[in-house]
Length: 265
Image 1 (cartoon, rainbow, N blue to C red):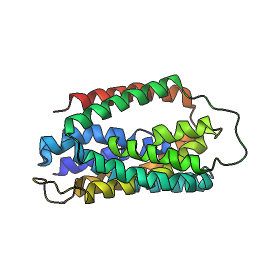
Image 2 (image 1 turned 90 degrees about the vertical axis):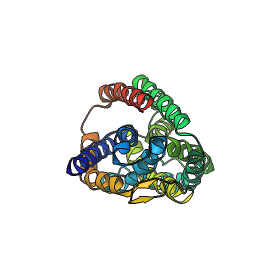
Image 3 (image 1 turned 135 degrees about the vertical axis):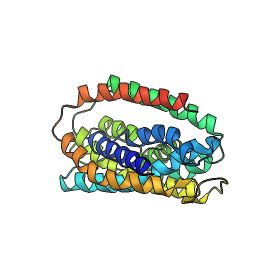
Image 4 (image 1 turned 180 degrees about the vertical axis):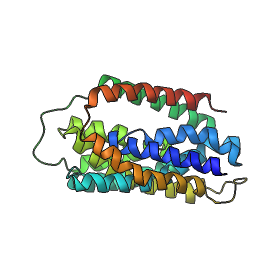
């Protein structure tokens, strides 16, 4: 049990750094690791993907709050843009989790692996390219509509939406570090809605004690504790490091994560 908690803490630290640094990847890393770890904690293999998604999203609530707070203190969260995105993100997160609880775990696994591949390709190619920085925060009902799609896909793959929100904002003329900061705040809304959906829209059987719907609370708590401490470190690095080389290295990492999920039992 001590070793298991150590793994949860290590996963949380890694996810927190990635969330603050890139606004992407923490959830995908968590899902990949949990799919392998949870069967050893008494989670039936045929429900491991659902529990991994739900647990990752529950922990992202705390990680996102820590990351968003750190970015806000540096002035890199565009709150008017967040306000337009959030209604769609909440709706999409709830609907996406509702669909996920009705899907077979193997189909979810294939969808997540494919998403990892697409996200890796997008990061490696550095697409879309940034426009000239705009002076005003992006806003309007189109962002609410985009948020619904981002929230639904995020719920299906267990992420805070950074791999979609960040490119969207960069394409619309937001400086990358502000896109990451804004995405971290948006991820809290996605994670809250989707995790609640996984907890309340399903009544799974055979899960270990400490489960709330598909959310395995001991794992979520251990991951969240470490992620709170690690997310500000990722935020500091995001303001110091050159992005392109780092994105390409992480693209390879994401491709490996996708392969790991695909090969999981």
